[in-house]
Length: 233
Length: 257
Image (cartoon, rainbow over all chains, first blue to last red; front, side, top):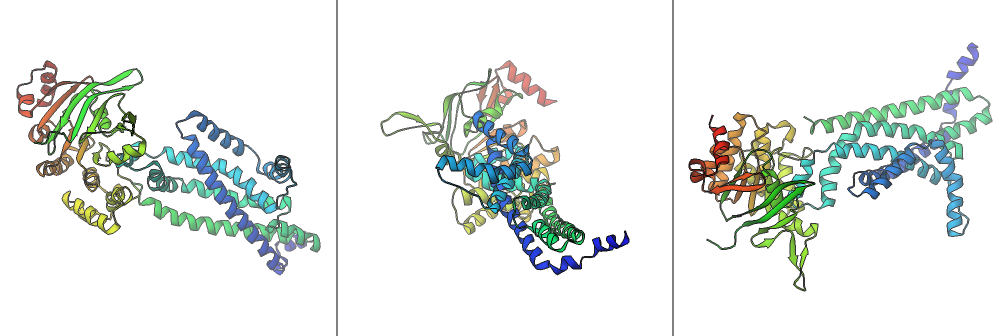
């Protein structure tokens, strides 16, 4: 018993493979970054549709949010990786295959675009209408109002919630190992199969994720709090 | 006096659903004149002011800025066409609006608020805009707060910053929508003081207000609005001392206590 406990906490094996594992981690980071960019841009688009005056536009935005927020990310990932290429292949009459990295980015990006759309929307709706009236009274175009008046306020307001979503998106990048994207977890299971000693590797992986998220999140929080406080009375 | 008024409001009607807030309001504002609009809450004062720069589009009637209709124009074939939003935008930037709730942009410093529209809408160079902006902040005695964020300012300071922001666009007229109604009495005077100076400098102004002493002292003309119609209008001396309308006399009596 004490032997296996010692083994579980002995991280020398984890360290031995740090080259491969680091590569896996870089992959996690890449999936995270690309999925985050996709989620933010599609999420903003969906949020703007949801606050539109025109009902059909609003409906499309709502459908988007409900569809992707309520799909489990694992199911989404498998669907995007195996079913979506088939459908596209039928339409363009050619065999299509997604690189696992592409599937991972699309699946996670879409799922999180649903969450981000709601965060954006809450931020947009919190802006006092008079703020926009003032901008209009100066003859600002709608595009100028969006970029200069709305978004800078929305981003400040939504930061705390967005940070939580970034953290959970980063955690979720680990499920991409299921479709053989060589991320950290995938590398861990590969090494495990060679070494037959899974415990220290899993402990090492857990600690790695924990430390990265802790450092990243507290860094962002400290920075954003100082930045936000200026505008909130 | 030039024959074309700076602002002409002609037979403006505005409905919100079944509620007809303005039922045909007409008046002219000439260059350098101050027109005050008074009346009970719900009489349509604020809606009227919002119609003047098309923040609310009138259902009927038209507003003219130096003879140019805000809502429509003649096309190449000589037919009247409604203006696009871009065209309305290029006219409404000639009118500076000061709101009851100040409506400063909280994520910009005071000077940032003031130079935003001159840079982005008028396309002035940054240094030009800064010079004008600082000049406007000096006019409202707020130059020492140029780099503060609005949240750190008192209500009176925020409203003066909002006035500076509107002035920086060098507007053809200033529209004030109950500019002191959100302020504590001791902060009201600093804002009214700035407005007095603007009037003395010959600024064309429409002022929706509950400050009767101010309206009486500063205005060239006063309009009493009741139920979406002009009930009585005239020089302040006549309106405040010899009102013919029974409703206006009752309304004024409430302010004399």
